[in-house]
Image 1 (cartoon, rainbow, N blue to C red):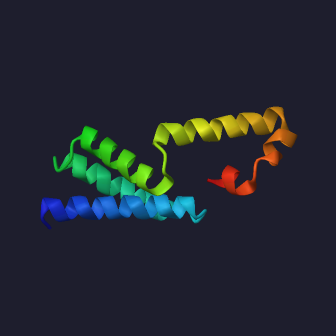
Image 2 (tube, one colour):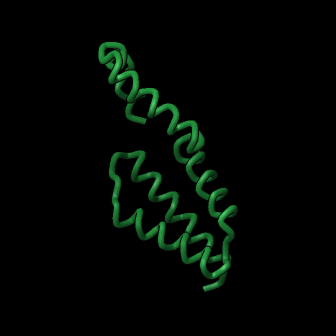
Image 3 (cartoon, rainbow, N blue to C red):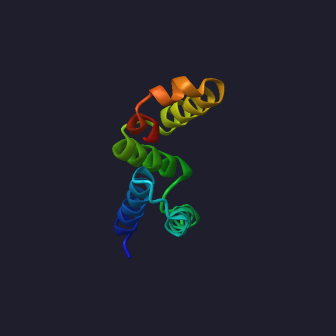
Length: 99
């Protein structure tokens, strides 16, 4: 397999992993397989750690519409709100809380 084809395959699998998570159909087996592909790309010097990070960030942004850091911050603030003020938490529409 050519390097470009392998990189494209890794990107497609990463996108599929994020789409599964977005649809609440997380599949750990697929996630771990994708992580293994990215690790193989690094070990075989096909991608650098920076390129892998950029790929993850790009695909995350395309699927979720926000960066990894933005999503983590939003989810942690929702968890904090749920703990401190459950009424305020449940006033937020479920579709917004789920994302």
